[in-house]
Image (tube, rainbow, N blue to C red; front, side, top):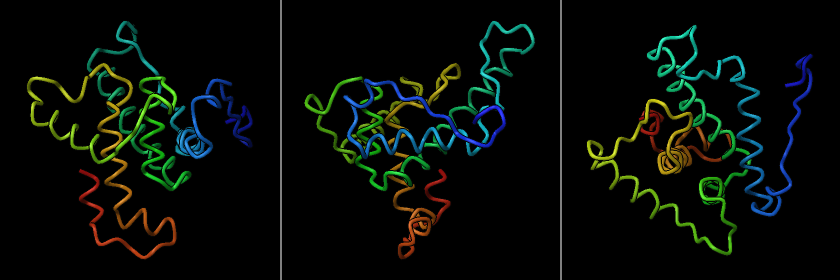
Length: 169
């Protein structure tokens, strides 16, 4: 938000226009608008060497930040209104490759996440020091949100039968 809080100022790097389709840009911009609308700038960005905070406090703030990213992904999905587009944008953010090198299949990606989850003790899913959730978790969460009653209602569509509690897991 601007200093007075009356406007939202968003700067986009020119390479984003080369990397993303217009609909993928809607997802990214919606995600960033979500941070502003939800007031995420009020949460401090801490490092583990900050003398004013214990490592446990930093871990808890980072966990909150990861949950905020999932909330903003939902707002980005509302902006682009296509879970494939949102997932493709996240994949491009992760790897930095343009569409000509990628073919995104959100269902296959979600299955991979489930397979990784089955090995959770070997490959931790929630790195306490990470500022963002892993992309596979973000895609899986978006797919679940896209099937929720809340998402359907937000778009003015007939309600989906899936319970909101399901996608909150």
